[in-house]
Image (cartoon, rainbow, N blue to C red; front, side, top):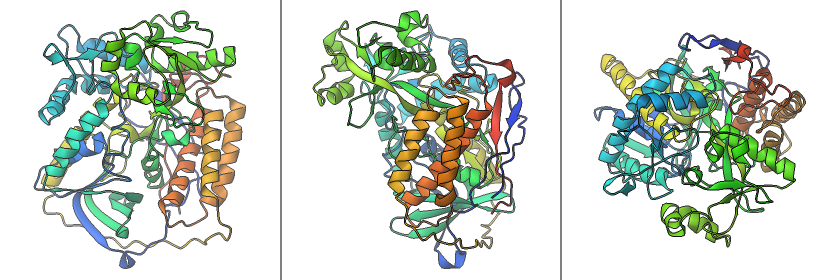
Length: 561
């Protein structure tokens, strides 16, 4: 195994220093399984989209109908981080709001690492993309015949559109999935795990995919798009569904694609905390509508921590909560909505009301126990303004990317917007490429991969996975330090030593290999960033340092075995 390399990117804003270089991570094997094209079925398409969330389907819908599109999803098409988005989508809709204010709020939340040009482009494109969703059948909530808007943390103006009260993602995805399924040129493979990207002569040619019905297949495409979502499942406390294991980040890294800012995992401040139960997101819109945060003694602590109190940016609210938990020696804090109109609260948040009633909690009266949980992966595959990655033939959009929009901390409800904008940009760029190269035929290169030896001892995959998730929360969570990161690196390297050496034949094994790869990248980036900025908090370097106003980029050398 060889070390990673880092290359500078010219697209980064001039206010940001050149990237920090890293060359100390051992790279896993190029392909997770041995294969020979002769032994597997082949499928062909013009555009392969890996991921069925909002970003991926927006790409598919933007491809002209004369081209064949295949969307591959790890689970059911309706299972993605996009579906679970509660709060809403941000956009300047109110005539009293202004693009400049949304831009300024995004830049302030990003703590010096946003690309101002990217932020401006995305914010200014928001109204047209939201109008597109409405035209496709999305029903946003209304008040007096107008789209209802709320405010969330870090926003200076109410500009968050929501649907079904607190089920915005579900409603958007209902409309978008229905539209995709109605298109004759779009095929959707569900329950299909993408093992690796296929590369040949320095370009992406498609992907090696395991399908529940078809087995391992080689899918050849003239253009491939990564839209695989986040990595919240690397942590025990997370708002993400089980599919969010960083697979896209890992397969991109193995293919030699540049990744950026992998130290930045955003923690959502308010995750329902009931010991022994699954964790559930409680949208920031609760605080946008006036909910307070109180500690075990009933003390409302946020006003003394930030001028925006409960509506401070997520990184600051999450740190304040963990500090208060430590101060009071209590495993959580509490959301208080008892001072708000009870009928209005139930109408505005029907899903959360239903959820909490299942635990005998009345959100209009009872303190709701919450604590932070891993929520959104800010770092990912580096893309430019056209959603191109550093690997020719590969585009990316959504949470699997580092686009320059979020910087060191994502502003609330900018994520769905990013997926829409960059999904549309990717589709436009791909369509132009396909139209120029319409005579080009599919190139099926010979691919050989040496078989690795199968280890004799059977691994308890669940035990390694649980240990990894606990380690990440303990050492690479909201607070980090040199000693904890070093211990995390040692343990992940140890586990990787025998997990990466095996050849698995089911998604559970490949998923664990991907999780270990992404965890190691995150640990390395967090170790290199010896400062505190945005969602990355180093207790041994508690202040921001101008010397670190730069990106950390990582890439695996070409030709690694």
